[in-house]
Amino acid sequence: MIFQVKKDIDAEYLKQLEEENLKLRIENAYLKELRRLRLEGTPQNKKRG
Image (cartoon, rainbow, N blue to C red; front, top):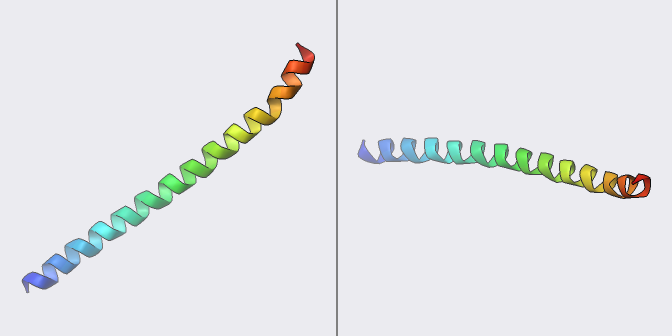
């Protein structure tokens, strides 16, 4: 019985880590795209200035 409880706790912890990993991967992709778009716009701003 004790092993089953530990296994359930480990499975729940793993699920939490996987969810956090997914959220961080989405955030990272968003920030990379935001940076790319910002850098893409930089030469245009220098030409106009």
